[in-house]
Length: 220
Figure: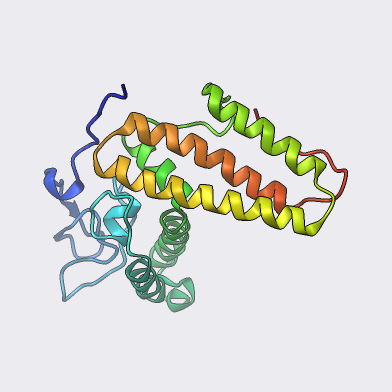
């Protein structure tokens, strides 16, 4: 039976070490993109312990992310840190804008994708999965082998469309199960499901690149 392993406490429950604004020298929230001093508002460096969740979803480390709100926050932040807006500023501000813009882009790409989001949550909890890890679950191994064979033997677009529908349905199921596992702090289960999801995503790529008679590599 899988052991329930608690994730690290949500950022809002942990003591936060304040950082000093490089411009006005006043203390500011370590996760803030801009100085919290209203008279300053200077763009800040990315904090060494700041997570994508801190900046883009209010600090709560969760698999259930509101995509509409995530995009709204992302667009607002990107508007504020876009390097073009700092072209006439000091060197330090131009550098910080480039760094923040790149970091926020990576954060948005990570959190909007359920597989990347799952990997990131596991990494933050010290349970990182490496993409090159081999399959150890015999049921998953059998599923992967059967899918590979089915794709390689397919002779028509109609057959591939049917395989795609089944794979998409499997992905939807895994995403629901991941939400439940992370919601229950069951990291063992979340790790298992993320590994499964990783291979289903590879199947999606194989389906997209399918050609009759072409060999398929989705890992093993």
